[in-house]
Length: 325
Image (cartoon, rainbow, N blue to C red):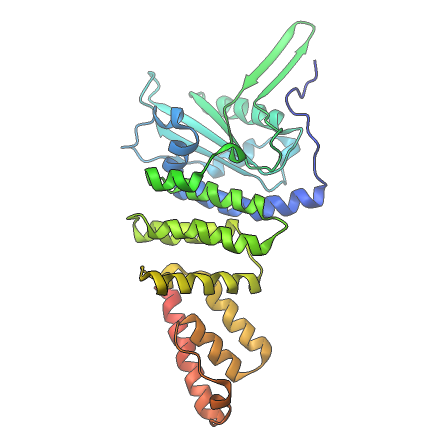
């Protein structure tokens, strides 16, 4: 019996694995920590149903680090360990281990098994291990680790959530209000538009529009906007296109503005103006970001430099104030 049963896959080159992992690692880690309850409700409802949510979950990330499998140490992976109050059983507490895998890896089932037994050995408490498969390969679905030697069998099965399998997550958000559905939608956008950034602008916009349709708390809206932008990263020029599209939507639909969502566009615009080395360019980009009428180049060119510097200083101060909101 193959000791890595269930792990066969065609793996990408190591450089591609590192790029994809680095792109998705941080937003997923932040999303799990900020929206853990919503994550379980959306991705693993059976686990969500057995937790007493009146008791706040306790994250044990530092305690998890020394338990990492030897072959996985030094890798940048998303894994979290959470202690929750259990509605069932005499122990009263349940350990929940979540592992995200953004690329096929033949060692993934082994890593899940090693984490599982090491966590159990460390805490001696009921434990569930959950896997989020966030890769682009619809055929890669590891859900068990099994070895057999001379009649000695080790077998371990774990629940999986395959991001690609989720149908219409944005629609699920609209129906249920679960914020994690939008993060799944954003991840799907990132996978679909890997080679088409113009399409990514359009599809990210489609996801972000849902933030205007539900009565979410401001803190949730801010965090979701950041995470969606993080998952669907855009180079500077495409980011500017997205922000212009969003500004037009806000104006024509008369909805709440995204001024306080703290997107990176303010910094991008200022950097672009500085690179051009033009006071006029910096003034015009700042006006764009503040949604002010853009001054005509020929009119600005006729004004004294000292006056332009004062105007730019005022505009940049207003942008900095907006970032602090």
